[in-house]
Image (cartoon, rainbow, N blue to C red; front, side):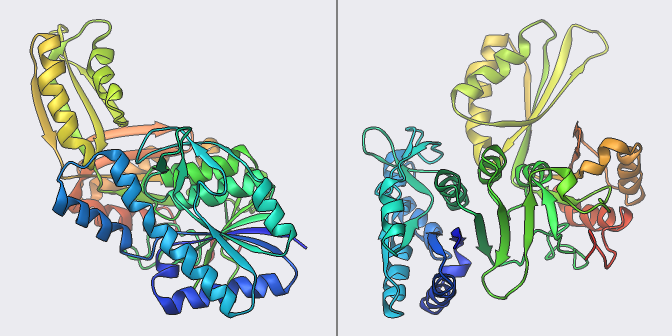
Length: 414
């Protein structure tokens, strides 16, 4: 008998029929004698519907009330799934995140899990129950409902698996695994049989929407076996492994290509080139809980001034621009601000980069051949990211996918 934590995303529970299908799948595991904890997202489109309702009432609702509102989507799904399991004569109980003891900090809309009390869940499992948990949410020390940010149900699932020491955390979604890139952009994308936690972390942070980055962080930190599967068809999915050595011996140079058009670029021109200027620019932005991604600082020919460029989430663009205009530029004694929301970031990811030179030069050559101009570059040990014009993003992805041999029929031994 094994303990599985199974997370089902919005498309997997997007209708009454889909919820019934999930119940049937859970019942098969239960009939095999396994213990099962199910984590569910809101039905597809429900969170957006709730956000739209809020915008019709107040275009600047407080974060606390937004968490109260959007958390209800997952609660609806969890109770419906428990009802569907009852219909199949499977004992099941649904819970909110708070009811199963998921304690978070008080950072509304992007809370972080601090601890999970598992005694009640374990008692239900030992009693033969399937435990159905509303994902994406918890409570702070004051009892306020908090949410974990978009994709937070993945984090709920992996965190519960870690706390319960589950044999495997299975993430069921609308795709049958992790692909070399998004198949909707590149029809020749291939499913990976396995990928390292390190690579998956990079892909998740760089725009891949298969898993939330915090979920992958949990899996890596607590050594949770993690598998991405399709809820619509049977198959082995993609296993996310802890160490490179556990993956196929035929490790490709590049494992995947991630991309996103959800970022915006801001540049402060003619800022003083003195120690501490970066802190003066980024400090107020950090104080507003806005995350910075790529950063480039150039020194002007005269040496007295610098141009400082960085990217943020497109949703944070207006607030960041206001902070720069109202706080940073006056504090620096001047400077010119420019912004661009029409950018995209394309990234190559692969542990094979550690032992192979020339990946960056090949990437730049491929983009140059397609007449794609690179506006920013960022690298790490297993990743190279470039910022380009948004309108050229899909062309760049397809060209790089082909150039690095990801179009071939056999990936990692499949």
